[in-house]
Length: 198
Ligand code: ITT
Image 1: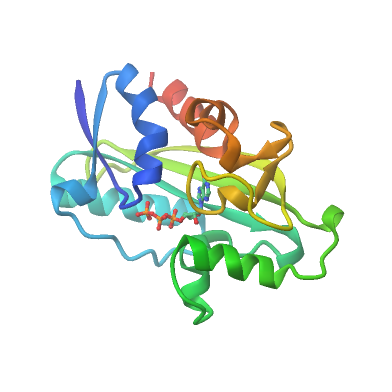
Image 2: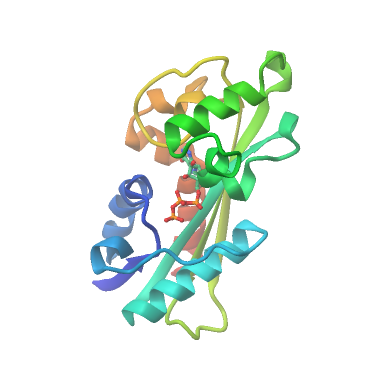
């Protein structure tokens, strides 16, 4: 087993990543459980932020680190909330956390017709063997869909209740963990990361 720190404070990500990673011989621990604080996400792209987070956790733990930087791109909002997905409501002084993020997204899309509510989730994974690793392994995945008019389902996390996945024909929050992982941005990025690592 390789011990790897997941450079994240989001237990939803751990849930979706740990089962598959365990099967491949990686024992992963959330950085929060090692007392490691969040890195400053000062990058302007998912890739930059994923690397910043992985480097920070590798340095603090002395372990190999895996980071996930992800978010929702909504076409009618010119790609917002994008890299700011976790901080969307907070940045607009409109509360904080998943419920407020979802409420603000619906507010910003008020009056936008269904066919113009196209969106995608993106996920970038960065794996670093140690904090000075000059060649992090990067993998990406995306998941196409549209933003619903109201929330549907209670599984998953974040914007899942508002995301209608085209391939599933259903809201992401109505899918089981296994169903979501087999088609999601994170599931696809993970598959690609494992192929690159082996
Ligand atoms: P860490 O940085 O600690 O990993 P975070 O939640 O702040 O946790 P990000 O900066 O990568 O992580 O922001 C990702 C946000 O994008 C997340 O909080 C959700 O709002 C949204 N998101 C990403 N993947 C998602 C998914 O599978 N389902 C629903 N929302 C998702």
